[in-house]
Length: 131
Image (cartoon, rainbow, N blue to C red):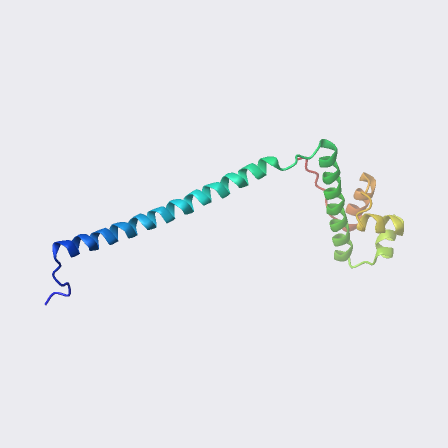
């Protein structure tokens, strides 16, 4: 015996109509989802273009701040690698304790002479990159 029962023509047409309507509902739902997704994407693109652009002075300020942070981190890391406290580190590098604290706090950038002195006491090389 077949699991399907025999349908009359009107029953068959009604079943086909229900399936057709269900397909159309799913298609409309998917179309609405795609439109919403496109709208979100367009909005994101518009918001990206409306983002305020930094002026040259502001960019320079942030670049300088990033440079201070890099030196702050690297000088502190070097001191820890050498297993020295701030006073010992300052003495070996021939710098004042206040100067070491300024550099490690990110309040000042080391001069070229100070960098060369730090390289000498650590036995490391200095690499410069222009980007």
